[in-house]
Length: 313
Image (cartoon, rainbow, N blue to C red; front, side, top):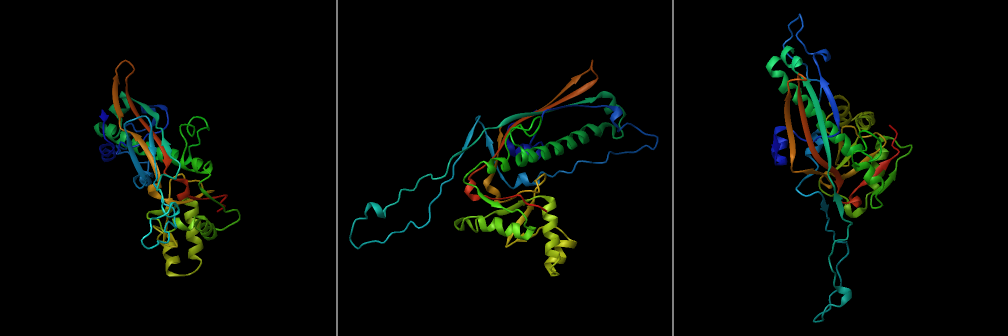
């Protein structure tokens, strides 16, 4: 099956794929009929990839794509003189003043084998194939988000596939760096926010990208203040903000970093052609599933990012 449009892909939940893996699903791995006559699998994969729906997704037809940001500097006004032609000093040539960034999607593949025996003798019978593929889709969506966050282009076998947002930001001199060594969660957020240049305060769609551990620590610190907000943070969880900016708990986000940026500043380039194929192999008694996709994480402008490092929670 060829999926020619990213919106169709998202609707089908055949979204983003990640690492190369060859895995065989056999009857010995579990799921065959048992004396208790169980009638369903238990879904074990929780889809953590919702954050991908909040960042900028760019559908690509070429091998590369450019991200350009048009920025107008502050204090452009000049004093006018009555009935006098504006001087060179009074005119401004607006131009692209922010370095262009490039999306270069990398091809990835997921290639599991499923044995005939597994499909014939499993506890869900005819529904097993759809259930199994549904679990695979959720897993690969999670893996793609993991790569968008943590890929470093060098750590072998998984993280070397491409380069994620954090590694890109660490190497970018335009990113606003905040050393959060020795700070508690509240103080770390305060420093990250304070490090962002004043002209970018209040940009729409801003969020703190944080780990689950950091989110819990912040909630506990807020709860210690014995306010209504503190009670809610401790007992109900859910959305929580710092100075009106929401904390987004991102799957696999490392606890040592806090990133403040507009979510729309984070990009994922996805090739328009995605393949989802199935091939029967009767002699091997297996069905081969092959899913391929090209994608690449990037962001538009490092100056919109304030990155807190050395966070200890």
